[in-house]
Image 1 (cartoon, rainbow, N blue to C red):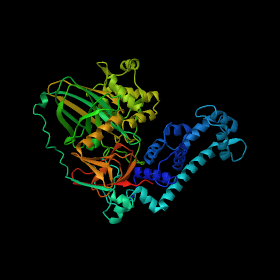
Image 2: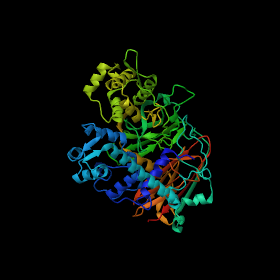
Image 3: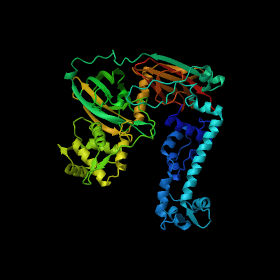
Length: 606
């Protein structure tokens, strides 16, 4: 069975790590070790990059840290290196003299020492004539990187015992040891990263630590959930809800390159104590009722906390625990005051997709018969959907504040008052705000500024979650509605992609406050909290001991499930005196019964 792109990536990570360390549970303890293991993965990290990943005060990094670094540290493309070298090749003869390159590399950018420059020439100056054949040097770098990766993978494949110990069964995808899973109820296939295995005795034992102590230190949890009752019977919408004060805001979950999910946070101000009805649900942008947007199956939640958005500490007030179809709800009383609303999704149904290399890249701009640029029909449709997402209040117009959240997401910059005034002069506006047509005109101007080069336009689309077929696959727009019975509340977006630690803390507290703690046998100071919600099961590991604990998680016997971890077997390292969200699990197919069967085991210290 063919492996997904994500599985291949993690296999390469493991192979590189295990070519340096005896186990993926061993920590890196120096910057030099980080450099070596990155090189084994086919990377050539600069000193600046190593300093960024290993800042002052760092004592160790684990395998998970290495995987995140490897996602960011891309291998240098030969064509890119060639372009750089050609800039220095003043004679255009394919060579750079020792003196020229030495002057450049020791005086600008990330400065190299004379010794480092000499080492480069000792490898690439095959004729010993003081000239660098940079084409040959690029080929040498590419070949060396490939050889490192190939050697690491061969070593891993040759050692079956090592493979089982560090991978479990989730990458042993032979037809005899795995079975097909139901697809998520979307119009597009999700990646098959959560694999179910047959219930053979040897499969169950192969991915667990083998010591007797480990088996005694296990905790097993089995929960069966019914087939998709998407209507909650525990919360009745108030009959007079249409008479309550109402406000709404839109937003979007964005999937980052490293797999984290970010979104806007919101400030809710309630002038007096009142009954409140909160809802959050995915925003359907499809014009065809029978074919809703593919992200409508993505789970959403809203956490209400008190505290300042610039601080990590906060108090959890409530969260939208109940469900009515695609909506998640909460009803209760809130006192007068200021609250932060933190949108959340588990990541079970919003995760990295397998990229289809054969997919044709959509065209963004055309030239008319007169030679003028115009946006294609497909690109206009995508921009119109983006407009809906960034029009936070749903007014059909973009204010400067709304536009700046879009700019922050796509370019990392903001539009000041002077630049906004120029926008209003040149593009269609209404009431000093940008219309949908004005937004299209702005993007056409950007295409004209680049003389039709679509690269910057693609950067914008990718930041908004689009692939090169103009499909929004790594984002999920949503709508928040707040109803107050006796007071008119205000709701305002305040931050993008900040407060992640605050959200994690709120999620953790919501689980530990609702679930009963169970200790692992032989380790009374290691507790597992398992929370059963309307549509998900979540767990937290609490380590009350004074030493780090590594907990092995095995979901292989679960059925019709998908985990936020993307794997059925993994390990979680929990520092001393801390709690950590372990995983969220949901049904792959809501219309079928599903079973959560998880075994947590302490892995003895090596």
